[in-house]
Length: 73
Image 1 (cartoon, rainbow, N blue to C red):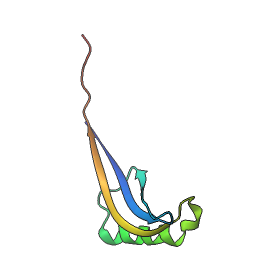
Image 2: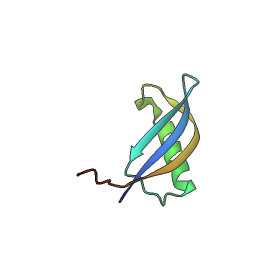
Image 3: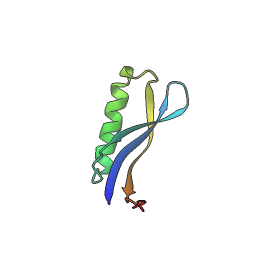
Image 4: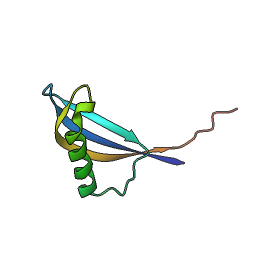
């Protein structure tokens, strides 16, 4: 059984819509302050994105567990 972790951050962008940004292999021990610092950095350097983020509205670490199934006869 394997666990995969992904950081998902939601931002309101210049187009007025909310968009999710995600990164695989996240650290599930990330603290609120770490996420806030990252979100602020992304907004500060937002011009690198096609749709510039202007406000962070959420962040979460998503953990997906995989279990192999034996389907051989």
